[in-house]
Amino acid sequence: MTQPRNPISWNECFMQMAYLIAMRSKDPSTQAGAVIVDENKIIVGLGYNGFPRGIDDGQLPWNRQGTLAETKYAYVVHAEENAIYNANKSVHGCTLYCTLFPCNECTKTIIQNGIKKIYYASDKYHDEEIWVASRKLLDLAGIEYEQYKPEFTLNLG
Image (cartoon, rainbow, N blue to C red; front, side, top):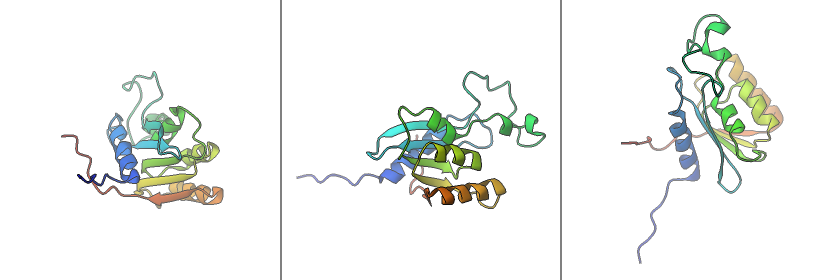
């Protein structure tokens, strides 16, 4: 009898999906992705960072420096927020997989929507105030978060 092969773990699967959906982002410097799954490991929402729906990507700046209105930061909707906005049902009690540790604004949305656990790949902004505040909020809300670095490189070729 042929033995079944060992598939990748659920964490690996969903984190790879987060990296795949991040490839939809048109941001020239940071492509972020997020996947939300329920307790049955069913995908509830997907998101990537980009401008709000219906806004032409060429009409707003992708700059990282300048006044707030001259940079992307005033306009971009983050991957985690978009995954929640795009969810096909309530995300209460769900798990979030994201390519970057969520900022404080996304964290407030995560808390308010009842997400119970976060797996993130990169924490490259760990010491910046926005992310320090994010961890403080998550700790106070009792939301678990854990770094998960993918075991494999996504191969689309």
